Length: 191
Image (cartoon, rainbow, N blue to C red):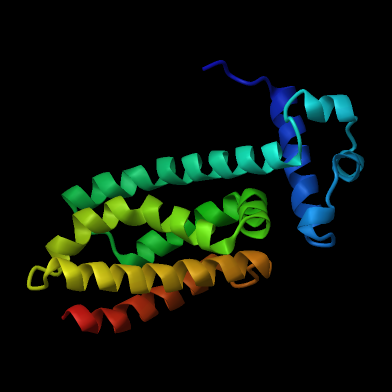
């Protein structure tokens, strides 16, 4: 795959920033290419050289975000096969990823059905769970582990989506600690 030059990366970053900014003040269905180009300070031709329309922009941002999330998760899958990764460490890292990719995360959460966002994140983390949980909860059957994962991951990702929409004013360390505490308390179900 051909590497994008710095100008293209900067232009796409400006478009993404403009889209995230517009979503904070403008209903999703009211965002037009003209509005986006004005906000990003680019011309329409520049927009069309990268995207077909607003839906194409959203789709590409979603795909890129999902791909980056999966690439980010892979080291955790490999690490959990060799050693124990604490939930705090996991939450700290994943929250850092979302903070680093705040515009993309905001666009994905605010322009798509939130349930699809939840499903995407849950499926990206699924590999870690499939490796780690049976080793941690050896006494439990697959159904108990499955129910626990669905319950905890659905709630966690919902909290994450709400924090993204609200601007996530809680520092990463504190939110990671609070989520970790919730997980530790609910893990009593599997103990």
